[in-house]
Length: 162
Image 1 (cartoon, rainbow, N blue to C red):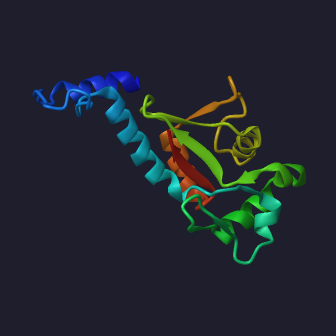
Image 2: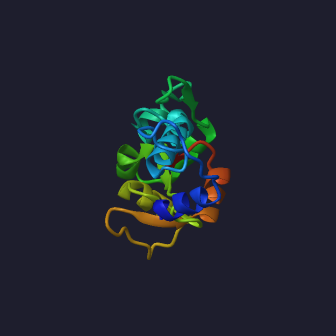
């Protein structure tokens, strides 16, 4: 899908001859791919470097984790306490936060999670159907559902661009 996107993006770029034949043109797919990878890494620098269990985060004051870019990711204490009192003890010990939700440029209306404990937590909270299952290590969830959960439980979900 990325190849289709890149092909469409390059279609309207003016083609001109260059005196430097060994230098790739701006419409070269590898140049665009490297540029997009760089931009996505900039977007993802605010993702936490290492996730922690809900039980540990709920006990922190303030609940803060370092990001990949060297900043701090602050959790909403009220959201943590709500999850801690709602979810079973065993799940609270295994659930790593924030839940990472991966947005893939090839899929417009959905994103996916790869953590089965996060899937179980979302089911218990009533945010997704108990009939939903992981397939190939992923559970696809509509973006509207993800955004609703993010509004209801601030800081519990982080978006990761792919």
